[in-house]
Amino acid sequence: MKPYQRRVNYYECDRMGITHHSNYIRFMEEARIDWMDQLGYGFERMEAEGVVSPIVSLSCQYKHPTTFKDVISIDLKVAKASNLKITFAYVMKVGEVVVCTAESTHCFFENNRPVSLQTRFPEFYKSLVNDNDLKQ
Image (cartoon, rainbow, N blue to C red; front, side, top):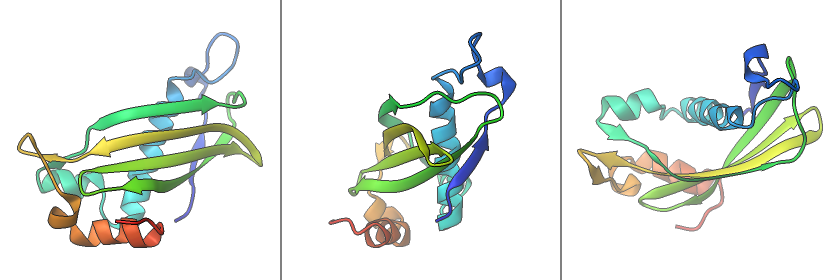
């Protein structure tokens, strides 16, 4: 998968000219949507099939500030996958400098009930496990 590229906008910076920390969560979502589109299982497809994917947990470690017009490259991989949850790991860089590392965990629901990825989206689940050398 190719990394997601994101240029920092002026309005995403605080009075000190630094990218506000809350924006990294948005950048993670953009990268995740792009990654799933590349995989062929975009959110639009899942939602059209009645499945939603709320976030369960999130953690960020801010390593180095970014500023207006910096281009952040976001590498995304699946850290863990089970029938009911996926944990994504993110490494955000400007050039070779790591600016943020993060993880987000998501579950899947259909009609307000948990969805087994392995049952509901077997090809998607298989690609998550196989492409990321994860144990089932």
